[in-house]
Amino acid sequence: MKPRVVITGAAGFIGSHLAERLLDLDYTVIGIDNLLTGDVQNIAHLVNRDFTFIKHDVTNYIYIDGPVDFVLHWASPASPIDYLELPIPTLKVGALGTHKALGLAKAKRAKFVLASTSEVYGDPLEHPQKETYWGNVNPIGPRGVYDEAKRFAEAMTVAYHRYHGLDTKIVRIFNTYGPRMRVNDGRAVPTFISQALRAEDITIFGDGRQTRSFCYISDLVDGVVRLMHAPTNDPINIGNPHEMTIEEIAKTIVRMTSSRSRLVYRPLPTDDPKVRQPDITRARALLGWEPKVSLEEGLTHTIEYFRTKPAAT
Image (cartoon, rainbow, N blue to C red):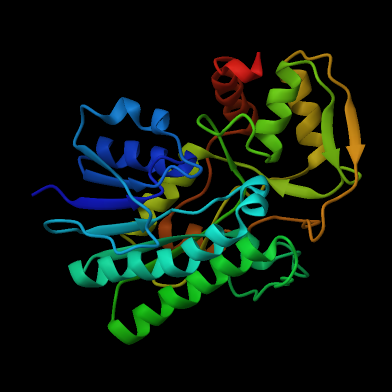
């Protein structure tokens, strides 16, 4: 029988790409999403494939008929705009949603993969960030609702592994970009592309010298698929170690879109990380993984996608 995988948050940016890749690999995919930040347009092209969509809030009990081989828990608001506007749903999906998704994996004896985040490192005092770093997080700051939700989700995932013997995986996702990101997502790449295509000012928070490492979506998905089958239960960083400043990525996008936009600077949000770069030694050793798509290639595909979106023109 074909392996069956359940993906929570399947109508989101990363979840929809994961669903598509696993279908290409001949999996049966069951996607769950309450569409709080997801979009059915992201999965509309999957309807005639071995894909089933269930509209459901995973903070409630999850029922799936028949066997399940993998549960991939991707449900969560993920952009600062989302989790600042939806602080309590963000906390609930990190806690209750993770509990329900782990319960499904336990009932089905399925492998479980948690989508965690580089935000568990907070505003890091270690650079680049290794998986052994415990982080520098403000639990009561505005970003704490997302950071601590993911940290709690990791703790619960490890508890299910230790107490119930569940085969669990944790992927710490660094900045990822590509088609199907929302125009008004609030993160750097979609915001800069949308502003550049509209010839609006490019809004940079702070002095633009804070750094990020941008990984193209196909590289990230490749890493996740490898992790699904890897004989490890420790957290794994998946991201592109090529570090650049926010100002550099903005100037690159302006150049690639031939935009007339100019850069404008605004105050830095509270607790915004000053640096972000993954140490991917563990991913290279355990998964044989490293990113392959160059920034220019990835941005070319992403810009082409955003040109088709009404709000970007």
